[in-house]
Image (cartoon, rainbow, N blue to C red):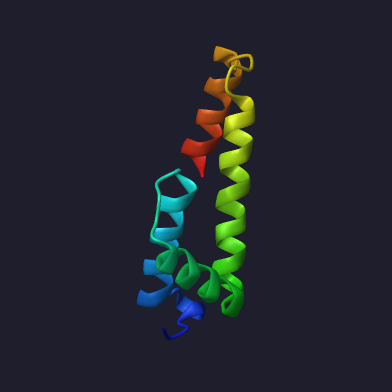
Length: 84
């Protein structure tokens, strides 16, 4: 597997897509998990992106059942997003 990390080439994109499937709780074959793990160990940018996605998933899971965002705050956030 080549390392196309500066621009997240085809191999990196494929590995990250399969890693996302794993993060979503879907089962992968042992050989696929090992291939993803080996790529992440070699490719710093993919490792960082995978780690960020994993942290976001954990945060979202932790926030389930938390107080919903007030409508006023949600509107303010949307305004800021629309401006950028």
